[in-house]
Image 1 (cartoon, rainbow, N blue to C red):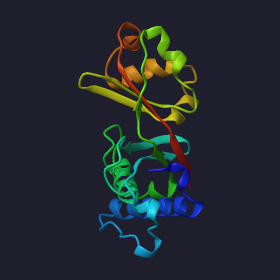
Image 2: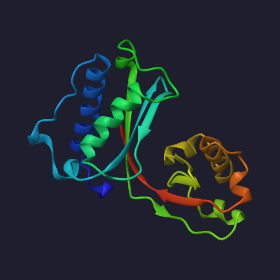
Image 3: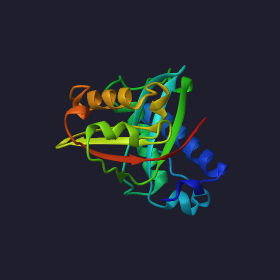
Length: 190
């Protein structure tokens, strides 16, 4: 999917649909169906997205997919609900918290492999504030959206935290070649 093609109206449609889905899911009601007349071609096209929930700037949930395998609007709806109710790091969002949530959607480009020949080379190839990064080592994997660079601004620190998220030591990326992919996002929020 070409993420540069989303109009401001399409972004607002996705944000409103994500919020309505969270409201219904937290209340135990059926998830809403988006009226067909609002489903533009980019919203129907396969897309991959992350939905991030915050309250007063603090993370409250974040769930997404790296690969596009269903319509973008469905991907956003499912990840909005999962971020609210199924992020293992947090208790499910309560009905009292719903009005406090700020919703951010990140629509991803397809991850592309990043080739490198030595651990020292890897930090030099990353573009802070632009690249989302996926690290893989065997069955272990983790990703950080490009927005994470705001908290972890140097490639070495970014990679160290990403290794820890993957479940290995922070210096793991310095000791062996990993499978690395990068992607970009179109980010928008309420």
